[in-house]
Image 1 (cartoon, one colour):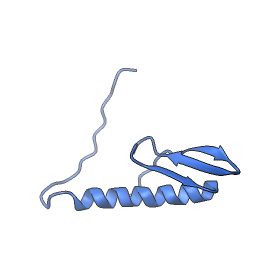
Image 2: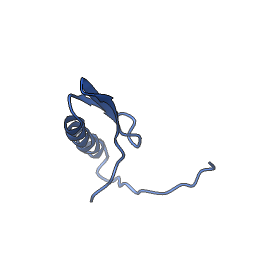
Image 3: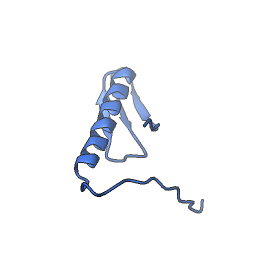
Length: 70
């Protein structure tokens, strides 16, 4: 399964930081945009691997959409 996430990047030539709004626990830093993008990709993969390993064998995940007032 493929999922898309937003990566918000801030910084300049001296360094960058980025976070994933959909997964607030993920914050990465690096010397280039490419580096923070690669680190964020790895962090997201590790995040989901840890979530899967913490689930009981009988549990399953279902994604739902919830409409909230603006």
